[in-house]
Length: 292
Image (cartoon, rainbow, N blue to C red; front, side):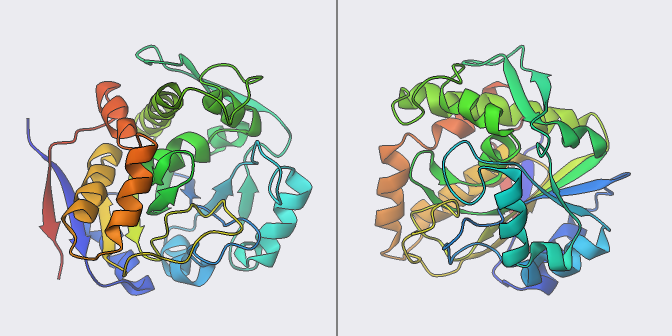
């Protein structure tokens, strides 16, 4: 079997983001959703609307998000809408909170290792294809956040997030779930969304290794970046692109990597890549293609 291709450039710019999408040679069909992290109130590291504007507009796409399962400025549609406006997303794009009415679409995961169902924002069924733009960074609960986290926690409804965090029990204390079961649930959920769009109009991934903090964009008090900007990666394989980002961090000469690696390993973060591969969402066997 041929290795999955992961394209890489060290040029971090909005023009480069468009270039990296184009190099994939993929046409996203029909109505396109762009899944990204809009940033919790107070977060300073999230990707800004201006950075993604040229690409989102090129695709005539809609920026999509879902409500959170924890207290904050995104746990209700009313507050989420307000924050999307404050962060500039609504100014630049059409924005859709996919579970705004509190309704879910249930995706089956017959091959799931921990969960067999995934509850995503119901509006996801209004889109034919998806572009996932991920800000690669650490995460206090998942170890790291990349394409697979965007697919899993990111596309899950508020109820779905609680279901994943509870490893199948939405009423469980999400902060006390067995870590291995939680990360496995994320991998299962991610595979279901990837397959959903792969069977519709297509799905592609761009990982931006910039503003690399040990904390996620969901953290309003996230630590400042611990590593210098690295670049942008592109692939049609979410497993390969996240594995490539992890490998780049481990191979980096940046001393700040030790802090990020400690965060990733303390949360068994790389397990999500293994689970998603086992569920058939992609391959860890990849090759890097450098883009000038």
